[in-house]
Amino acid sequence: MRQHKHAWLSLIAVFALILGACADEGGSDTTDSPGETPTTGTEELPVVRISALSGGLTGVAAQIVEENGFDVANGFDGEFFYNDPDASGQFFLQRESDVAFDFDAIGAAIARTEGLNVSVFYPILNNNNCILIQPGAAYGTPEDLIGEDVGHFGADSGTTTSFTIYIQTLFDFNLLDDYNLVETGPPALVELLQDGEVEAIFDFVPHSSRAMVQVEAECMFGPLASVELPNDAISHLSQMAAFEDWLDENPELAQAVIAAWDDAIAWILEDPTRITEEPYRTTLGQDDQAVLDLIAEQVTSIPLFTNDWSADVQAGTEAWIDLAADQDVLIEENPGGIVVDVSG
Image (cartoon, rainbow, N blue to C red):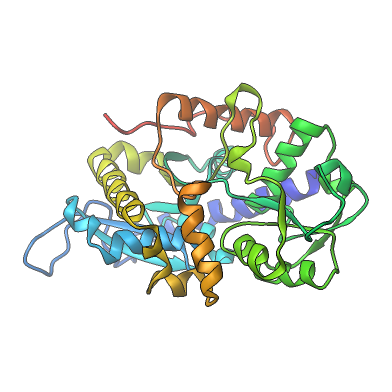
C-alpha cells in the first residue's frame, strides 16, 4: 500500500511544481479570474469556474446547475469544465477551476501534505460504492473473498481507497494484500464479472446499476453510505473542494455555489427520473432503460445525492480522515484544515 501512496504524493508534487511555474509566468492566463465579472451579457455577474467529470454523477450534478441556470439565479456566472477522470484532479490542482465537484476529503488531505491548501466545503454524492458478486455466489462478507480474483479500477482510486479503509476497520485485513486484484476501467468491470473472470468487483453508480440489471449482480457489501463506521465516520463519494485562499477571498461566492447545488438537488428530488433524460442520460453513459430506471430509484433509495453539511456530518468527515491516517491509507496524519463551513 505504501508504494501506491508514494505514487499519489509524487503526482501531487508535480502539480505543485506546475503551479509554481504558472505563478512565475504571471499574466499569461486570459481566463476570467475568480470574482471577475464577465464583459458580455446584460447583467454583470462574478465568474466561478466549476469542474466535474465528463461522465457519471458529478458531471450530472454540474450539468443540472448549468442547464437550469441555478448559477445565475444565485448571483454568479458559472463557467463549467467537464474533464476526463485521468485529468480532472490535475485540472483543479493547477487552479484551472475554482471549485471542483469531483474531489473528496482524502484527496484534499493528500494535497495538503504537499503544501496545496485544498479544503472541502459541501457534499455532492453519498458513497454508493458496492462490492458486487454474481447472483447466488457463495460469498457473504468481504472476508470470504480473501484469495479470490476481484476487479477494481486502481489502488489509488477513491473507490478502492474507500473499501481499503472500511475493510481494514471492520474486518482487520488489507484487501490490497489479500485479494487478487484485477484492474480495468469501471465500465469494463461489469463484463469481467459477467464473464466469470473475477469473483467480485468494486464499482459505483451507474456501472454498479448496470451490473445489477444486466448481470443480476448482488451488492454483497455496500452501498458504503449504509455501512456504519467507528466514531460515526462518513465517507462521501464527492464533495465541493476549493483552495483555502479562494474560500477566504470569496465566501459569498462559495455560499452562492452551495445555494445553486441546493436548488439542483431540490430539482432532482422533485422527479428523480429527470436525470435519466437528456443531456444527463448521455452523461451517465447508459442506454438501457431498465438501468436508467434503477438509477432513478437509487436517487432516493441510497440516496445518491446529498447536501447535508450539518455539524455531525462535518465531524464525521473529520473522523473519516482520521481513519485513513490511522491505517496509513494514502496519508499518515490528518493535516487539518480540510473540512470547512462557509455558511457564515
